[in-house]
Amino acid sequence: MAATTTVEPQPSPREAEDRRRAVATFAASVAAVAIVVACYWVLMLNPEAGGLSHRRITHLLQFAGSSSRLGDRLSGVTVDEARLAVAASAVFAVVWGLAGYLLLTTSWQGAWKTGFGRRTEGRTLALPLAVGGAAVALVEKALTLIAVTDDGGGVGYADWLWSILPKMIVTLAWVKWLLAGTLILVVVAMTVSAATAFARTTLPKANDDLKPTDPASKPTAGAPPPA
Image (tube, rainbow, N blue to C red; front, side, top):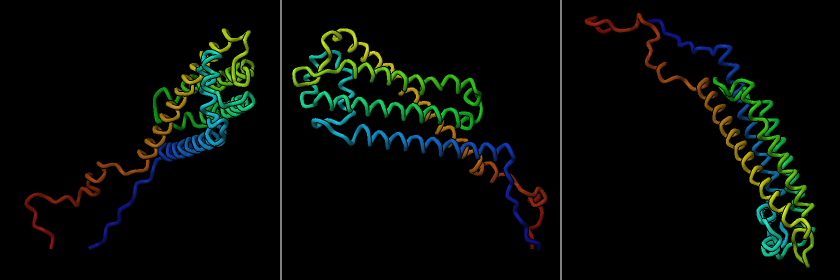
């Protein structure tokens, strides 16, 4: 009895291209996230001033809202240390804005199998999340550097600006976090979509095991068993 040989089905050119794009998009997403997390650790978490990390200092500067609250919360931080934290935060804003922009421009269409996301209009709508978020963050940092001053040995806002810039800084901070949060959700959706597309083109389908490969080998009712 001749041995039968099972021939593995070869992917179509469309499936091969979808697989290549899915792998490239997933790898780009992981690389972008790794770069942003590493820069966040180096610029925002690792340095400390007055017992506070740069992340904590910039967070307090963003949402203090008034010079009195700022002085109470940053009692152990000097003006130079506060400005250094703001400058580090500005550099980090450039990093995550550039990483998001490059990821969206190079990997957007490869992340989506079908639907509106695969079209260039979807990428056009997503790009302002990275560009606009980073731009708003840089404007907020610039206003913070202008407003922060030495308030009797501590950190405070300049007297002639106390009623204007702190409120603008708070507003810009909320807008920045809204855009950045939406960008994070978009990147997560791209990564999940790319991983799903790769799985669909790589893993065998469950129904394939149920399909007979040779109709002639299907036993006939009432036929005697093979010798």
